[in-house]
Amino acid sequence: MTLDLLIRNATFPWRGQFVKGNIAVRSGKIVKLFRGSCTETAERVINAENRVVLPGLIDVHVHLRDLEQSYKEDYHTGTCAAAAGGITTVLDMPNTRPKTDSAEVLKFKKKLAQGKAMVNVGFFSLFPSRIDEIPKIIEEGAVAFKVYPQDPESWLTGSLPDRLKSASKFGKPVAVHPEEKVKDEYNTIQQFLQVHSINIEFSAVIRYTLAAERAQCHLHLCHITSKRTVEYIRTLKASYPRVSCEVTPHHLLLTRKHIEEKGSLLKVLPPLRENEDLESLWLALNQGIIDVIASDHAPHQKSEKEKSISDASPGFPGLETTLSLMLTQVNAGRISLKRLVEVLSENPAKIFKIKSKGKIEEGYDADLTIIDLKAKGKINPDSFYSKAKYSPFEGWTVKGKPITTIVNGVVVMEHGEIIAPKGAGSVLTT
Image 1 (spheres, rainbow, N blue to C red):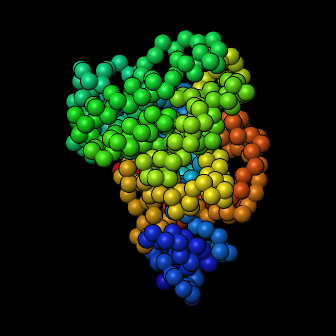
Image 2: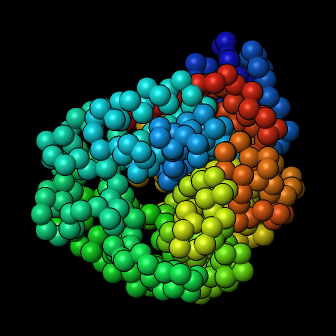
Image 3: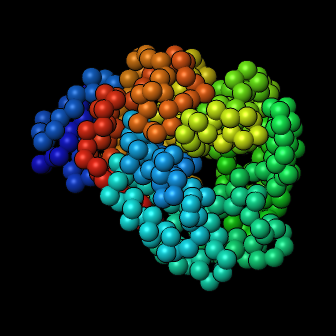
């Protein structure tokens, strides 16, 4: 057998357990898994030296910007950041400028990304103004639809219920930002937290899930934050399993006190919550109630964060910190590596129907992330590939990091350096 790549002496998840063996890759696919000794040769051989190889990580909530916001991030810098963070597939959000709400815009974004991307990129779409445009957007390759609180149509009236039914008909999930539309006026951090309260999130979740049940569509709740929301989802899933949800590292690791200490740098939507909410999120994550960890990578120029709380842009970069932060929690015993694989690889592929990804299996795409669980370091935003050179986790010590990122059989990142040519990634067409 002639191989392009052979990874020797690896520990990797396979059919519910971690095994030791070798991974053979040809033409971008995993063609053979060897449990014991391996005599095969390849153009490139990587000795994993008993490090762990994970199925390539899938980040389902990423803002790659580009287009009119390329000064914040573009498809090249954003996907370099993904590869540096051990992530092999990202799903780009549609609230860009111009916004993604037609087949024409989606086609343009795909073409632009194809020549820049270093990892696999899939695209969300907003619902178009005309319902008969939905099949065209799906045909163009949208992985899912996204709804924001500022969208003009009600969840329960008008034509949006028909749009949900149409998404369900074509088997596409609908992701939502779980907050009610609010009058966004505040001058202090305390006022900001009050405007974007837990009640605003919970009320929206009730509306979204009611509409989803009526339309019988798959609803994906983005970045949930509160104990109250978690308990409702726990009950809901027993009767309506077509609901999934995600949590971010910052909502798992930071609380209200951090934004009160550091100010607008930590402004994010939804905002950081109380410690009891954080603990509830961890419990739900480990119990399987929360399905996905996603970064909500939302880059801005640092100057856009260094403003008053009312004027600062919400969000921060996360592609280069998510895996290391979570591996640190694995080392601390807060989450198992097996569960981490489920929420960073397997579940994202399953929920968003990303074919041949999310597992290390023969016939699957050779998207692989080699990690060193013992490697230590400090988070330094100055070294980010992202254009956003700031982080709420600046200076944090981490234990565990990605060593090599392989996308469709191509080594894109090695020891922190991007080594593949520009455009080495691909655009998803599912």
